[in-house]
Length: 193
Image 1 (cartoon, one colour):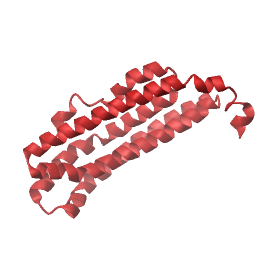
Image 2 (spheres, rainbow, N blue to C red):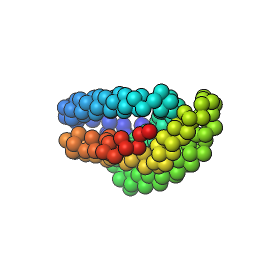
Image 3 (cartoon, rainbow, N blue to C red):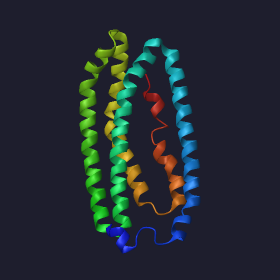
Image 4 (cartoon, one colour):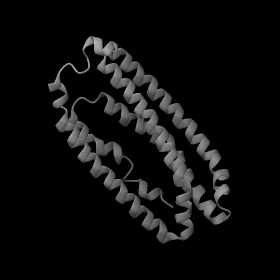
């Protein structure tokens, strides 16, 4: 209500229309990036499946927790983004800076907590779904690598969302988005089972 009274929302139709083209470009770029990640996952799964059936099972057992860690990071990052965008829209840059600082600090804490919980909890989680010791050992090897870097993943996701929240130049966003999406693409395949 404060923002509507100050005239920040809906004051100029032109302001809303000039953002349409960059949004369309962003949606198209995001579609291509997600398609690239989809193909990468298929190729990754293909090569893991060629190793053995147990390797593919190990990957499938770890993936839900890996996805949960990523989802927590994305949810927290989007919350930071929303708060930053809110304060920037209200012309309160000091509060936006505080939200960024506090949010990134909490992301580090979240990353540390998720890393510890996942590394300690994986043996019990895996034993709930498999009794094959070879599969469990492969899954533990994979999960140790994946969850050791959970803090890096959560912080990277938070940086990406903060970047979205404060980015003014839409063309630069389209250019830098692939860097954030595929930040580990060059060395990640070496980490697979």
